[in-house]
Image 1 (cartoon, rainbow, N blue to C red):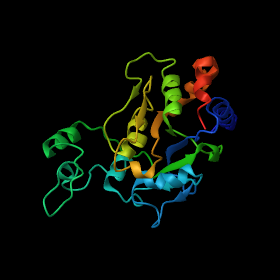
Image 2: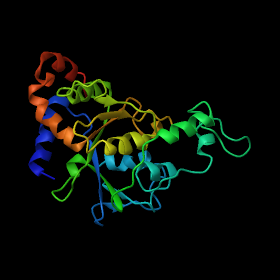
Image 3: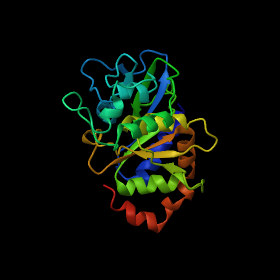
Image 4: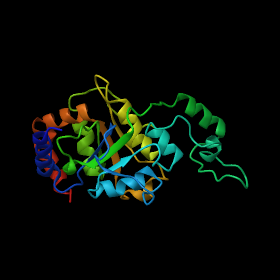
Length: 247
C-alpha cells in the first residue's frame, strides 16, 4: 500500500466529505497475521462481523471461520449454498424450513442461481481493514463505503466522472456479502471496472445504519476516483451546498 496515497485520500475525504465514515478495504492473502482471525465470538453473518472492522478492528476470515453458508460462497470459499436454498429464499417448506420470501418461487431461485457468478478465493484468507488502519504491507483489492444519501450521491457521480457507460454503477440483486465482496471483486480485473451499490438485503440491514447503503469499487477504479476529485464537481458551489448537510 502506498502510504502517501493513503494519506492523500484521507485529506481529500475530509476536505470534501467532512466527517463522513471512511471506507474499509479487503484483499486476499496467504499470509497469517495480517489481521485477527475470526473466532467463535465472531458473528455468523459477514455483514455483522464487519461492524467491528468499521470501528477500526481489522479482521481476517477463512473457509473455516465463516459461519454462514452463503457467506462462504460469496467470499469464494465454497461453491454451494445450504440444501433447499431455493425454498429458503422463497416461501420455505411447511414445518421444516422458514422462507425469507425474497423471491416468489423456488423455480425462480434455481434459475437465478444458474445465472449467478461464482469465483474461488485465490488465497486462504480474506482480510478486512478500515482505510486508516492500512500499512505498507497491505494490498487492497476493493474499497467499500457505507454512505448516507448525500455521500452516496458524491461517490456515484465521482465514479462516473470518467466513465459515461450507463452501467458504470450497478445494483444487482444479492445478499449483503455478495454486493460488498463478490460483485466488486469479480470486476477488479476489468479494463473499465464498475462500482456497486448494495446492502439492500433485508437480512443484512439490521447490521448497518438505517440511512446507509454500501458503495463498493475495485481499487484501480477507486484510485482514479481519488485522482479526479479536485477537478470534478466536488470543487463547485453545487457540491458545497450539499457538503454543508454532511455531518
